[in-house]
Image (cartoon, rainbow, N blue to C red; front, side, top):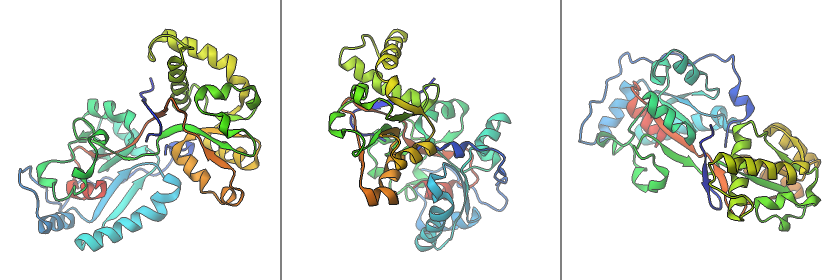
Amino acid sequence: MVVSVIVAGCAGSSPSASALATGTTPLPSTAPSAAVSVAPSSVALSKDQIIAALKSEGGKVSLSSWDFGGLSADILPAQFKAYTQATYGVPIDVSWDSTGTALQQAEQANKLPSQVGLDVIDNEEDHNPKYAQLGWVEKMNLPEYANVMTNWDKIDPAYINADATGVVYQGFEWLAPVARKDKVDVSAIKDWTDLANPALKGKILMYTLDNDRGQLTFYAILKSLIKQGIVTGDLWTEDAVKQGLVWFKKNIEQNVLKYVDTDEMRTKMQSGEAGISITWGSYVRELMASDWNKRDNVLVPIYPSSGVSADRETVRIAKGTPHPVTARVLAN
């Protein structure tokens, strides 16, 4: 079952297929050796105590997240190391699992992620109920970490999990169209139902409906149909879903050039074979900034008036992490 957030206007990159690759080396165990645990306290750690904790925790932290087009290897670890050196005088090394292997190991072995080497868990918010049920995450803003989580009070409460075990930090996790203005009339697409225009026959790329991304797209279309009175009933009822699927098959399916994954979307949009791609907002930003689009200036992002589905990126602290201070410095 897809857990989605339907939001009006634009809301909060999702993993590419390569992020699900297997066969990579799992993270090494990071069970504490000389690390000194920070005892729960109502008194916030001082700057000197934070520095001492970072040193005792070994100057390292592990993260499970997506690759984000190379950020994991080329950008963030180097910048984070420079940041911790400048801020605390302690250079911190980041171990980054971009495959999800460590999380799979934890679930299969019935262990906490911290027991297989993870300190920080970052992925979409639909994982929140599962992690809460498994007891995998811990409260981020405990009083002793007030001087570590210095950005906490700047966050809109709408972006914080109700139990403070996660924070939405990345706002481009929506699914919406991006169109080539040289291939389609962008001005004629105001809402999802406009994708039924016969002029768009064979011009749309989207994810399959048996995929969570395709399902998120479908629920956004269904919400538009209900708002317009084309479909009756509640968004989450089986009857409304059936009505929506019938309407989709009759009105939009003939306009779908192909059900594809993200890489093929990129290729067909660049070649001009397709006119519209329905994909994650982070990939829309990537396409907009591509060399070929900066040269041709043909892409236009579309935000359907009835809203979009979103599954926003959320950062969490692994329960029982042997690096509780370092993990929060990274999350912060």
